[in-house]
Image (cartoon, rainbow, N blue to C red; front, side):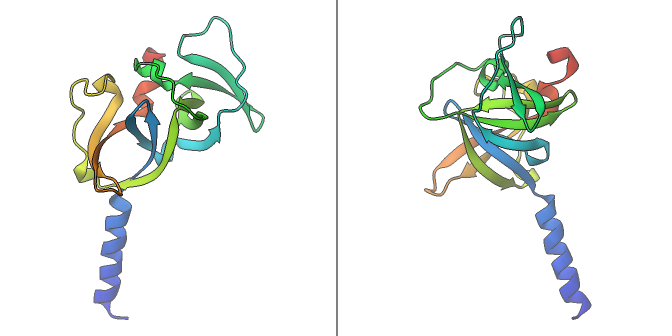
Length: 164
């Protein structure tokens, strides 16, 4: 194999690894994404035990493989309206500086690769989320050629000590 072919493969691999990989989900009608490296597990809405005298956005705790994990209603945490979406909710368990936290979301859409150059700065209060918690936004084209705004959240900023 010539050096050019090897260099070409390395260049292609470098381009692929430069992409940002996200887990996407719905909060109400909004398409939201988080960096896949923060995601520990995605699970169905399992038994959540309420904990008295906690913040309004904390639903309670769940037992995940012997670990007790707090579960947060992400809509309440971000100040979004509480629309009831038919179907069973999902919980995305993410890693934070305080350990694992479960995020209650309406629907998990899947994984998506995004070119970092396509990510734009967060617009001022575009969907009602504080821009401080948004890493950026990107326009994506769905399978039916319709375009949609994807809001990328910064999990570390949402769950930092002065914001709990």
